[in-house]
Image 1 (cartoon, helix red, strand yellow):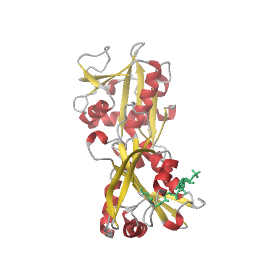
Image 2 (cartoon, helix red, strand yellow):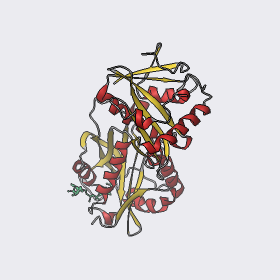
Image 3 (cartoon, helix red, strand yellow):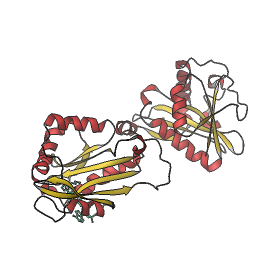
Image 4 (cartoon, protein in one colour):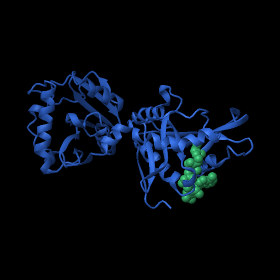
Length: 348
Ligand SMILES: CC(C)(COP(=O)(O)OP(=O)(O)OC[C@H]1O[C@@H](n2cnc3c(N)ncnc32)[C@H](O)[C@@H]1OP(=O)(O)O)[C@@H](O)C(=O)NCCC(=O)NCCS
């Protein structure tokens, strides 16, 4: 029954179709606890606002929208950032045909990619099933791997009756795992345009050009920085050796847009090296992907990762800090980068 079913990102122009699905849930059921049907304008505003950070997805069959789902902030305070609240509504005649499952599967895949750790659903629950509410949603969520975390008795009032509410939870990662930085949904979508792979000889010239352009952009001196590195155009040779690696990021056309390397300093300490991205690839989450790739390799070979950068590369320092690097006073070992005045270290 999921033949010809597609799931795509919603647009603000979907507002009338989505509101047509939602309105009867407001007027006729205690599934939604809104009591006034929002205007199309308000619904459009909600879509736009959600998409600034979270996925908003629609399911289509035969060119018609048959359901939608999205996530949003859970509670809203900063420490809850990695938890998100889910919402899902289908056209009543399209229920029990696998549409909900398809939407939730995609929502969960995206949430994991965003580094969300916990999903929560707030669900109206009948004291006694009636014409406005049954346990269908809670049962569906249980089937999708959500567990009941609490039942709130009689906390809702609609149609002249009290209704219970339940919160259900699905954990996407182990509860003691440190969450990686949250990737906003728009950045994730842009990031999907890029791929990361180990450097090959054909990439040498492109990465050399990118590094020189980035260093010039920040007014880096040509002496005592990577600019002067004689190996700048030979990364495929020097990094494909024991304990050393370099990865490039390429866009949809195959053009190199940046890269990152891991180089051996001592038997236990490596250096994060030559992390540069062209301006269009910045702010897309790609840097985080490159960092994750490099650190995964570093962890297999070393216990600490060091880096040096320039004091005026403040965005880079903030980014390294987010990934667990802390400032250190002295170089861990002497490198040729004597113009690099900021040094950072991370335990792997
Ligand atoms: C809840 C809702 C989104 C579920 O979507 P759906 O398309 O009907 O569910 P699916 O057909 O994709 O079912 C997915 C799986 O869950 C199971 N399932 C669905 N409803 C179930 C229920 N009430 N009890 C137990 N299992 C259920 C299906 O058997 C299917 O199992 P499978 O994994 O073996 O294939 C949908 O019924 C709906 O829109 N309901 C009204 C709005 C609503 O309640 N929204 C939630 C507000 S909190």
